[in-house]
Image (cartoon, rainbow, N blue to C red; front, side):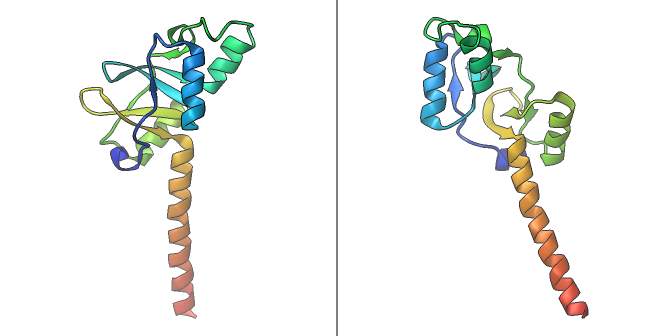
Length: 140
């Protein structure tokens, strides 16, 4: 169940914020992406790459550009009752690195990143390796 492993609380942004305000929120919370919400439902994603490529590299003023003008719209979301394999499939199919996790009503409850899945699977593989190693020692 993704609601057990997703990152909470989620750092969010409003579509009406300036890009500068959003960038400061990213820096203060040490995150590379914000979920843009309206009435607690995801309506977009803003990443540090969006800011660098679509604002700074284009010579736009981050104090006057709004989040809604550069965010990725209609983000792919995943339901909280699904599992890691479902999330892995969604990452593989979509090519995104982060998925907002939502409840049945579409309300944001967390975020799962592909990095989170890699860490969780790595930990699980460590347990499997330990079990195999212990089994081999007993068989000797």
